[in-house]
Amino acid sequence: MIPFSPPRVDQKIIDEVVDTLQSGWWTTGPKTKRFEKELTKYCGNRTTVAVSSATAGLELMLRWFGVKEGDEVIIPAYTYSATANVVCHLGAIPVMVDTQHDFNISPNEIAKHITIKTKVIMPVDIAGFPCDYNEIKQIIEEQKDKFVPNGPEQLKLGKILLLADAAHSVGARYKGSMSGAIADVSVFSFHAVKNLATAEGGAIAINLPEQFNRKEIYSYLCMLSLHGQSKDALAKTEKGGWRYDIIEPGYKCNMTDIQASIGLVELQRYEEETLKRRKEIFDRYSVALSKYEWADIPVAETEEKQSSYHIYLLRLNNFVELQRDQVIKEIFDKDVSVNVHFQPLPLLTAYKSREYKMEDYPKSFDNYQREITLPLYYSLTNEQVDQVIKVVVASVENVLNS
Figure (cartoon, rainbow, N blue to C red):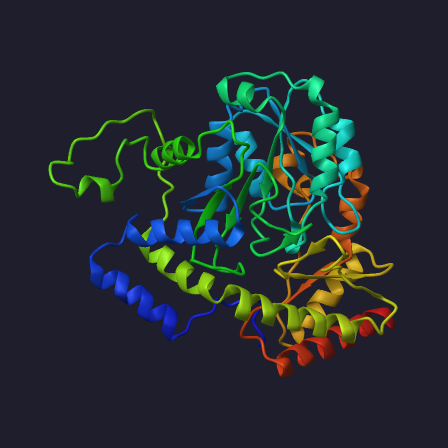
């Protein structure tokens, strides 16, 4: 069986984790702080806060910006549930809009859905391919008069917050800028299946304008991610530093040094090894599958954008959901693991019960019902890639001829 997305584990990672274990410092400490600085340097944003997951990072930023019950946050209908869940946690309303052929949120649909309740736009870089950020920024500027600030951070920003769900897009580029330095704030995921994995984990890449004090924001988010405590464990190791305060009822979503150990190794080799190999695999799929009329090949590069090659979203032209599902079964029967990214939110019980209707998002459904995600990870060999291609071709043609 060719697996779908196993994490990369080699001696470098093992040695770094063992070094952390033997240091006696397992939780948030020097390696986490170093990982934050290295990420900031790599992405070119202003400051970075490491957290336990992208989901936690998104929710912390929404809370920092003062999003509350009744506010609206615009998100794509085509995304993983975490994008919408964090909005619901605050009692705010996820305003879902349709997507484009490239799977990303449609700027035209965003423009139609901005109201005086809109506080945040949260685009998602599906598969690591950047959204149309300049168009979204222009819409925010053009509809600035609709923004009704509520709270100090909203007053200071003076516009809708552009908060990128960049869970897939570490290393992606848009108009010469790295993901993390494009939106006001971007949030990465380092889950085990991501390009840059730390088992679990995430990071908030802050790129807010100059009127914001980045040190204050960094300190606040660190405090909020650790129960609202005024000192982290590292600070409390100083002589007489045991006393702390709880500034506000916070959360427990800090990154540990064990996680950061893996991240430091992965980040060091990310550009020259990880992205390079993922692009090779992506291109090998595209060259082979482009020979077939039924294959709708995903775009990974344009003049303005370069993907992080997180996942390979193959679509089958003129297929419906039932046919796609038959192809997936055939592929699994031939010992290749594939997936589907994603089931659009209105198909899920949590959001169907909130009266979101799939028929309101026709492009999202069309993308979904024709999509199969192929294996794409560093250790996948060329021989395995060729086997995946062979199996996919045979499975599609079996269904077409049945």
